[in-house]
Length: 125
Image (cartoon, rainbow, N blue to C red):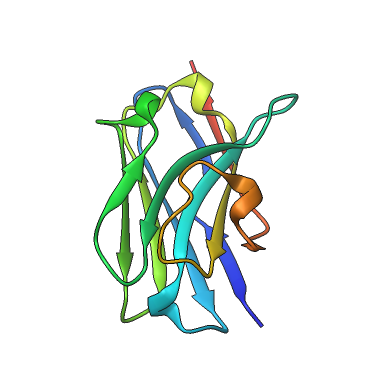
């Protein structure tokens, strides 16, 4: 059974940084698309970043380029999201997700089969 467990959320001031982690288990790690999504109250879930577990190519949403970085540790099956220069509008629940695909459906939450429980990020001005 695929399990994804996020951690690392919290409250920071604008301009600060956080690193989110997502521990994955229960599947062959090398054949999945892994993504980060976020959802703010009253808004739709949006794609933040994605990476193919068997490679190195990544996707970062335009509004987060230059501030957010997605990476992975294949040995520990852990996905990361480094978030720098945080803004109040980055406040949201952040989720990691996985899909058994080799072509990553960037920014498409409907294409991901497995989800973590989420970790809250709150950025104050």
